[in-house]
Amino acid sequence: MRFLLIIAVFVVSAVMTVLAGSGLAEDATLERYSPDLVKKAQSGDANAQFRLGHCYSCGKHGVAIDYKEAAKWFAKSAEQGNAAAQYGLGYCYANGEGLAQDYKEAIKWYTKSAEQGDADAQYNLGWCYDKAKGVTLDYKEAVKWWTKAAEQGHSMAQNNRGAGYYRGEGVTQDYKEAVKWYTKAAKQRNSLAQYNLGFCYYNGEGVAQDYEEAVEWFTKSAEQGFDAAQLMLGNCYYNGEGVTQDYEEAVEWFTKSAEQGLREAQHRLGNCYNKGKGVTKDYREAVKWLTKAAEQGDMTAKGELQVIKKTGSNPGGPMN
Image 1: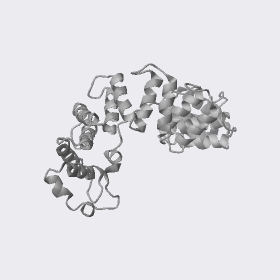
Image 2: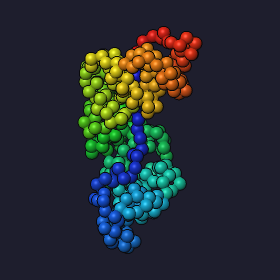
Image 3: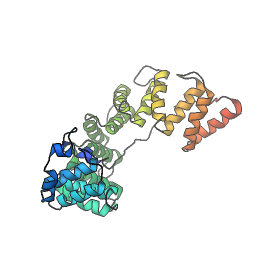
Image 4: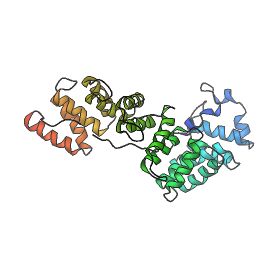
């Protein structure tokens, strides 16, 4: 069965992850880290203002999370041209943290930061153009900014460059280029890119079809908890594609994915319990998982449930 490629482009999850290089020691209180930080920030030191905003945004170093304070200090620093603070302020506007959500303001500050070369701002600015958040939908502009971030080694931007080539959005569709960018991101342990690269190997898109290589990348992604990769890895074990057929291993990966709520995995797991593939037959478990899939709109699972409830078994066809 051919699965849809999952190409997700997310806003960076938190300012703290982008500012990991700020030099703030994990175990230090604010006072121990820099006794004069507040005084410097209040006197107009842009770097101190940014660092203080970072502390408030993350709730570290003896400071409770306070998004309003974070936004206040980011703004003071951003207005002085600090690129990291401009990114932080844009993030606050985009996510409504400490300020009313306002994508146009987010675009304004992301752009200022991106033009100074901040890779995270470039990535998020590309995301805004891709999703028409605060700007008109413009795939070419998204590609422009993702390229700048990708060339700095930003793994999500690299993944999204691959996605652009895969879908032919903002660029001419080119599976080989997609594979190139997915590979760059996957080698940085980006779980989404690892899944996407595995998918390309699984289907022979941009590369020769190679189930073993697909399994290698699905495994790397699945071990990081990516639900779609767990599903595909389970599928490979179930069908013996790139690995020795192993129903028990398939059930293990279907379970991990199903427990995260992925409908297709819930369906497959339900079928395994119903048919006794990799587990002892258990109609209650089969009904449990097929119901979860059906409740998410899986009509095939819904039909199988009706058969089980009528007959106590399901003579349904192969899973794949």
